[in-house]
Length: 409
Ligand SMILES: Cc1cc2nc3c(=O)[nH]c(=O)nc-3n(C[C@H](O)[C@H](O)[C@H](O)COP(=O)(O)OP(=O)(O)OC[C@H]3O[C@@H](n4cnc5c(N)ncnc54)[C@H](O)[C@@H]3O)c2cc1C
Image: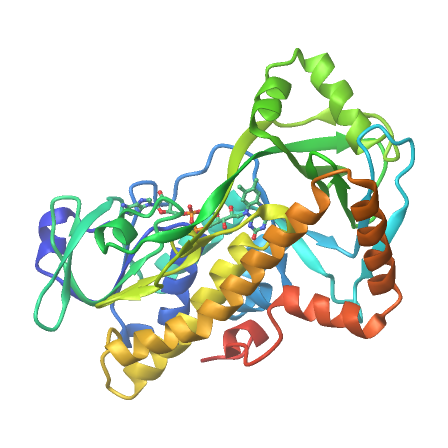
């Protein structure tokens, strides 16, 4: 890894602050398309480190094709599990049976999504970034200053320059604050309890989303008779659940998970993640672009967070590569405006859609429940609409960037 004094004298085309999935994927897309024709630096104090906990993501078809295109998916696929069916139920935590109101099935042998572990994705992306010649610095980016034709980033104690700085530094983005970009949003007052559950019987690639009055409860298939859960509860309730003795916690879990997959065991330490909705008022500033959670944090009920981030990456990579192939400035204001236009509607629509679903389902008012169940059954009987929803979740609708179709930029 380059040391700070050496970094100080360097000029890059693009500096990416944040080596999570979004930041590393962007670096790989740029080098994959332009090779040595683009100088890219990724800086992150935790670069290449394991998160140290089991966190699984549902990767939809479009983002998966992007990962295939940049040569990353082959390393992740053997450890990923296909979601072949998704069942949606509306009920109460202690109902003996919760009937399926809406069901999605894989199309033409293409799974609805794949479940992959966060650490496997980041490790594969980091390895590929190094193979592709991305420069890496295990340091944080604390600030930046605009120069005449470039932007200077403070990376540790060094100050390299670039024509474009990308903030991929997560939901609490320091660079977004430094650029004075406000966010709009709210706290859900809910936490998502995340854990890996081992069970006796095969899940056969079936994912379930149970809409319970306290919040959605998702069961997502992992390899080897294990599933990942995202269990939403009001924040105080989530903390109280985690404070229970293990046997009592397991009893509460069993009531929600049910025993249809046989006996269950908790296979990772459950953690509670506070949930919020936060969208940046602007996705760009002078020579700065936001991607991933730095630009938007949404409710995880449809597992769209990193998928939206990878859709940002596909859009920004296409614009930066287009500029550089024409010998133009990758940080030019008109190029960044195009990026913002390309992403704003998709992000707002997905974020507000998840928010509306969460509000509609996180209650037990009988008339509302009857109405939403009627709506779910209606969608279930409309194959055209179901196909549309699957394509939307896959990132395949509208003028999708080429990388989401697995095509080169
Ligand atoms: C309970 C829960 C379940 C979820 N489930 C799913 C799911 O199934 N599918 C899905 O798509 N999404 C899911 N998400 C959302 C997903 O976790 C995020 O969207 C995703 O992690 C964002 O990736 P990112 O690369 O933008 O940011 P992050 O993963 O937050 O990475 C940011 C990186 O920036 C680094 N960094 C921070 N500050 C600096 C700095 N100043 N300089 C340099 N580097 C810095 C950090 O060390 C980190 O490595 C879930 C979220 C929650 C809360």
